Image (cartoon, rainbow, N blue to C red; front, side, top):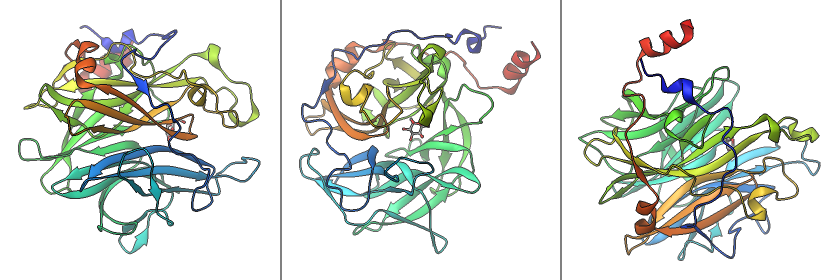
Length: 357
Ligand code: BMA
């Protein structure tokens, strides 16, 4: 049997950003500078256009001056803007209410507009590991109410912006600390609360510039050619291992790519970028000077402008700042290659055969 899991490259090699991507010349658009409450790193920001305004929800890590771990606090901030570039930040972080409590360390949030409401998909940390969830905005201030919480270990849960074939959908990215690669999955729900029918959406083996894990980036965008997913891809290379005390051995590289899925059957992959859209190249992406996860592009927001052609991608870089790059759908189609998913079904026998060897 053809086994795509066997074919993950040991090393991905040199990567460059696609010439179709234009970084905003004023990047970064958000850092900790001037932030309304204690913050060290402001990155990985969900962005959505809602009621004629842009909303942003960046992750905010606050560290002691010597950066000693763990962080003093991790929160998600909330801000708004008319132009999608200059944001006014609320003075308090987002509070996600769940069964009378406020969830701790909410981070890596995405914003989805669904049926006229604004939703936050997020990850939070507690003593039982990382867990994902989805919450609805109360419409003012920074309070959100959780509508569902997932089990550990998952990040990058992302709510789809509309029902497909009668069901709500969400992206998921389960992980397990012992066995990479990690892939992008989806689940369906009749009511946003109970989720099931989980299946593989995109395998790490489908992304030529990943050898370790992939994860959803922004909520999928509906286009006339299909559902467009901006995702992140990760490759490791022992030769890149860093030798600084804060992150001895860090050798990951996070890049950004795009995949296209069938409009009627979004589980069907129809095209992908064989090369990254964005790979770390600007100085704020390769080495911001005071933080360790260099070479990290982490997209969390994608907004199609009113012309339905200009695509903005918002991404965190180096777990340090929030940035913006633009292209057009026309250009994007020109760098996407038609394809189908390598593993047709994510079946149990397939993995067992593999593990027997
Ligand atoms: C991922 C998440 C992101 C982070 C990235 C790079 O696992 O923790 O928040 O940006 O790693 O460190």
